[in-house]
Length: 150
Image (tube, rainbow, N blue to C red):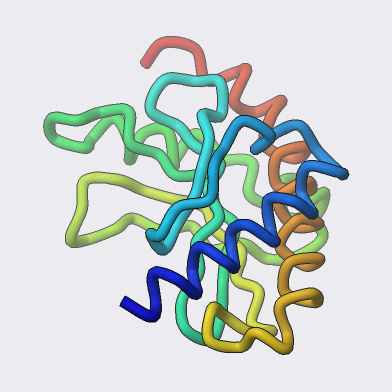
């Protein structure tokens, strides 16, 4: 499928750029799916990139509680308690999402410059995504250390 080929090219270029700026996704291979990610160092939490046709995002994906999802909600709430300082340090508002159709939650930031169909815009999109990911990790990392056992 054309979109699989395009997405793999998108991730290949993104991960090559990211590797020069952060070790976070250095062990990740480009795939054909609409996201790539790595563990956030806490079980069930991942720092992911995801891409759609005309935009893309960075996110902390929270799926530790594989049963009811209530634990995921609790983690999101704990982090949300520091929303003001987290967004101030990140430098922009974030989306704090309970994913209705899934048990997972996420904290995301959308880069609206383009997606996998906008190949001519990829250099700017990739720059913006890597920059946002570095800020997201740096901002959230201290808060993740404080989560402790639920």
